[in-house]
Length: 181
Image (cartoon, rainbow, N blue to C red; front, side, top):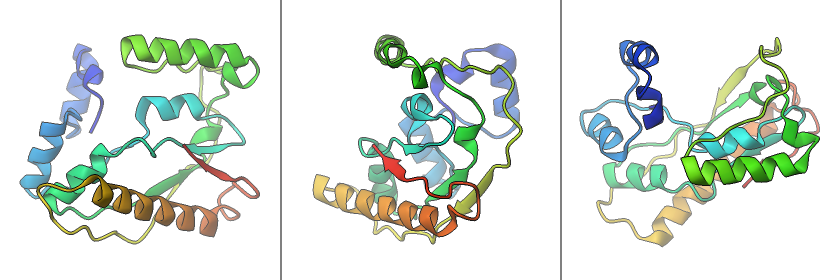
């Protein structure tokens, strides 16, 4: 899945579609799951990009409940995945200039996309290693309650924390706390 705005640029759209990427609109994700496909998504999305900076491990998922609700509605298992090294690729100006983050948040609120102010154009040469936790089996319920959604979200977060701390020392995040917003 990719954000809707990714499909507005003609050549980029063609590359995405050719690679099997679909618009992350809820109805598209649901249709894919209903047809028996698996989907991959980054729940933190644009907001999480603003937190990504070297030496930190930040996830923005506490307010991202739509993917949990969709998993419950369709009875789709969730597989928490953490990718070590991603936050090391680019430096951000907001690390040195806190007012930049305020501007970024305002920009995102107005335009719906994030504007990470990176300090390097080319990504740093860093190994990226993705580790997956055990799948979380989700019981199908076409009308989940907020309590059910929150319960599965907390299970998802705990699973991410377990896999993060199990592999942090091995994959370059030794001593880094996983911050979940």
